[in-house]
Image 1 (cartoon, rainbow, N blue to C red):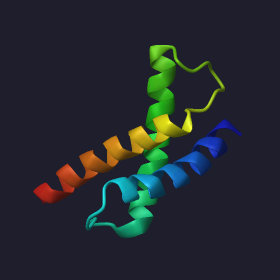
Image 2 (tube, rainbow, N blue to C red):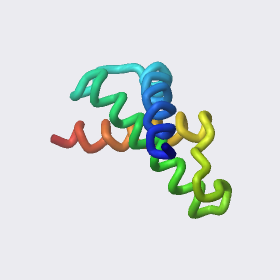
Image 3 (spheres, helix red, strand yellow):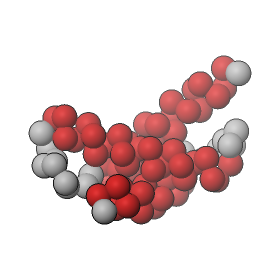
Image 4 (cartoon, one colour):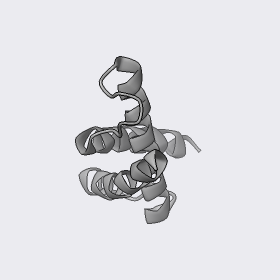
Length: 82
């Protein structure tokens, strides 16, 4: 259930990250939403490593948005090189 919660938060965070960072993405909306899910997972794992979140606790919504923006920025940087 923990992973499903991250996926749902990630879907919303990916959509908001796209609104925060507008522009043309090489992969479109679906890839942006998948990157949002990856950003939410990233924020959750980093929060656990730093001791912010306890095991079984999902990342906060704002942390998921920040993680999604970071992953989206990295994706755009690597996709622009190709």
